[in-house]
Amino acid sequence: MTLDISKIRQDFPILEREIRPGVKLVYLDSTATSQKPVSVLAAMDEFYRHSNANIHRGVHVLAEESTAMYENAREAIARFIHAKSPRQIIYTRNTTESINLVAYSWGRANLKNNDLVILTEMEHHSNLVPWHILAAEKGIRLEFIPVDDQGLLDLDVYRNLLSQGPKLVSFTHMSNVLGTINPAADIIKLAHEAGALALLDGAQSVPHFKIDVQALDVDFMAFSAHKMVGPTGIGALYGKTELLEAMPPFLGGGDMIKEVKLRSFRPNDLPYKFEAGTPAIAEAIGFGAAVKYLEGLGMDAIAAHEQEMITYALERLEEIPGVKVFGPVAEKKGGVAAFTLTGVHPHDVAQILDSLGVAVRAGHHCAQPLHEKYNIPATSRASFYLYNTREEIDALVNGIYKVKEYFG
Image (cartoon, rainbow, N blue to C red; front, side, top):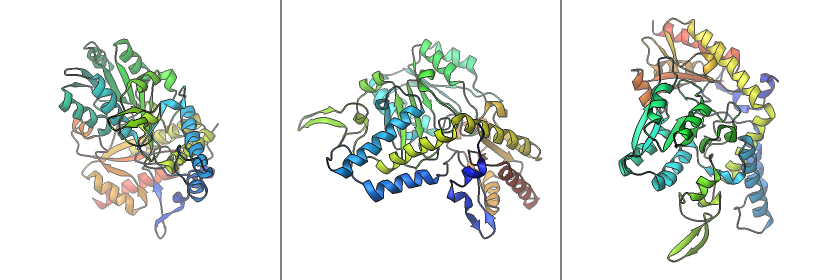
């Protein structure tokens, strides 16, 4: 099954926008956030127009409709990642909050002074800072799997680190800078053999290729709706049931309690124990609609299209004198091309490309340690998704040639 890209692009109204008269948008920033199809916009609009009410407590028609739509979305998300039960899906604001939930709840309850947590050098700040905070508070140790010259993890060093008896291995499935797709199943299996739990940052993998949390045997996985054609402001944490049930609540307030007295409380059952207060109801419904949209296209077809895009992009970028692309070869990465252009700051590259309608990102992409490793302050980053075309990659390349002309 191959994707009909011209038909898919019709589902995304924003792709028809002209940034200025005669300059059409070329959106190459889906790693930061993806665009949204009409079906997702319509699902959220339908909720607000016809069923808007708070969930779970009400007995009137609107409340029951809202609750059903909210929980149906949770069931769709659970199916999408092949979780055993919707109870294993905790709604959060985003991947960042999901990782923080594990650090604050599981970490504070289970980690003590000198316990080891293994991370990698390619982590997003979201999977670094929560552990830095915990290290400062509880004295845990952090060690890092290095990245080699090809942009791949050094698994020999990882095996040596595992001999030190870690409690947790937390790592990104796919780098948001290098595009590297890490061998998650192997990393998780080795972690378990060493007696450690595994947390997977799925922000860049869940949107792009098929994920089966049961086959991976991962203990926790964090991901966000907005990177997978869904709305901003909502994400999810998957966790194994026995771990989630043993963890203390993350936030206190309404809906996460079963009973409250003046001097005590009993937390609610899963998943509500971790969902305090009125949630992002419309966004959850949009999340469910996004999952259904991706399922309709087929994740294998999406992955194949993105592999075609990154293969073509690397071929074109490599022909430009002065361009250096970071990360492994196309077969070992997703649709991300972070690059530098000799003599031109990445922000200047992005700004001139923007004048031509080509939207890319520039900066350290919330991965400062990785950029420090390569001794560069920033990169420009083009990223591709299910709606991108070869013609848009050509527009990127033509734009970079114009950058070179401008800077002489």
